[in-house]
Amino acid sequence: MTTLYEELSWRGLLYDATEGVQEALANEHVTAYIGFDPTASSLHVGSLLQVMLLARLQRFGHAPIAVIGGGTGMVGDPSGKSQERVLLGAEQIETNLAGIRGQLSRFLDFSAAGNAARIVNNADWLASIDLLSFLRDAGKHFTVNYMLQKEAVSRRLESEDGISFTEFSYLLLQAYDYLQLFDRCGCTLQMGGSDQWGNITAGIDLIRKLRAKKAHGLVVPLVMTATGVKFGKTEAGTIWLDPARTPPFAFYQFWLNADDRDVLNYLKYFTFLEREAIAALERAHLAAPEKREAARVLARSVTTLVHGSEEAAKAERGAASLFAGDLSAMVGPEGLSVGNDVPSTSVTVGELQQHTLPQWLVKTGLARSNSDATRLIRGGGVYVNNERATDEKKRFSRDDTIGGEIIVLGKGQRQKHVIRVGAE
Image (tube, rainbow, N blue to C red; front, top):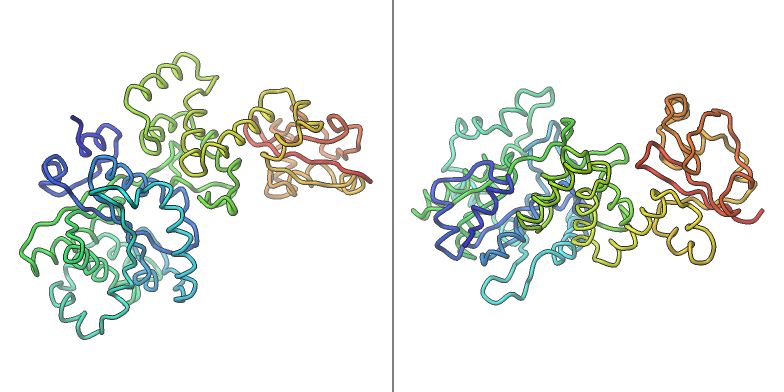
């Protein structure tokens, strides 16, 4: 029977682990945690790998804990950051905590017999400890030299802005978190991204010094795209898990538009598809890459996980209407419901005629500026109703619409926006 360690290995999700993790995951009932900073009321796709890691852990019979950093969120983690975070107030953190709890519940089972998931707020212990006790119980066990050797700290020391004492102390706080979870919940494994390795090993050291017990750490790689960009960074901004921030259609399109070189890795990282299913998709992709079957399965699978099967189906219908070539399916009473699933702007005929094509590209978010829009048109990258546009001064009228109702603007073959034209 496959173990979690073996599962993570074939999926390419093992970056580093302490000695003994493989045996513990194979032979013990392990309680493990990952921390999430409550910097917003929603998680984003950059956090999704960690959420999936907890969900995989639970599927293999172990007990997951999601630690929401209500305490550490008031300090800020310097890991992977070139500048200090903006510190949040207690009220904003509580709002953010509520949003994150709801999103985690889509992935974790909080009523499972024997390995129910838990969400804890580290403010439960950090908010009540006094400074002298913290310095005595945690601070005395770490030398400054030890802390300076940690990559997150050393990198910030070399930066122009340096690092404040507040963020410098973050490593101690996270180590103290691990100690508390070890005592309170029997937690013996902390997981996270590879940039958390220094914080994780600090917690392991603290448990060893104060409890004379062994704890473990396991980290996954930081995901980069094939173009060398940090995963989740897009021209359109952050891709959130909250449908109010990133609509399901836009979320679906983010995955559908993934670089072909990234799709198979993303299927391993962000879905529960088994090895055989992913291998079959790889064969299909190699045989007919233009069909992008693997990307479609990726988009459908992740959107279903985050937003549910109904929203995934709506997003898929909307994409089919926009990209299959038959735009007439989007007009009329039946087409209206499908069209509602795609990004759109509603205007009157008068408003439509007020702006040029480059201006509409900017207004719909397909271009950053008029000059960017003009460059896209000259480069042949702009489409109107699936026809390549060439007129930089083009102004629309009702005659340009499909069925008197819509105009579909496109940037390349993958980004679309519908202009809905109403009455005068």
